Image 1: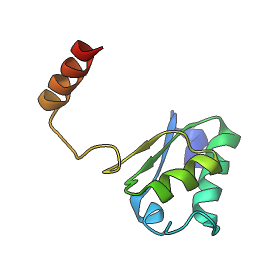
Image 2 (image 1 turned 180 degrees about the horizontal axis):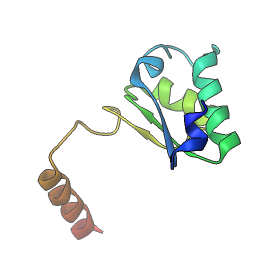
Image 3 (image 1 turned 30 degrees about the horizontal axis):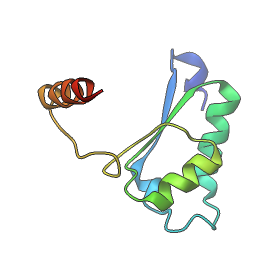
Image 4 (image 1 turned 45 degrees about the vertical axis):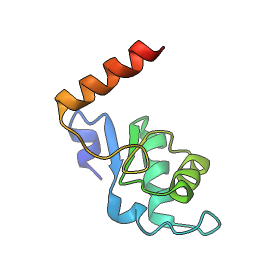
Length: 93
């Protein structure tokens, strides 16, 4: 924890291994809640990685984590494919 003050850290990620434990949004997941609290308390950005289900998304959002990444949103892709996808979406607008 002391490293959070020593280095220029701006973002904390919640590891996928903690996200995978979220099977329902009615339970408590103390490690996830603690990471969210630490990020808030230190004024750091927070990203949950490995979000695969809407239950995980709902739990994280209700707990205060607004930025997430994972298969729920899209499968991994190369930078080139991402740029193509963004161009296609921009052309539809």
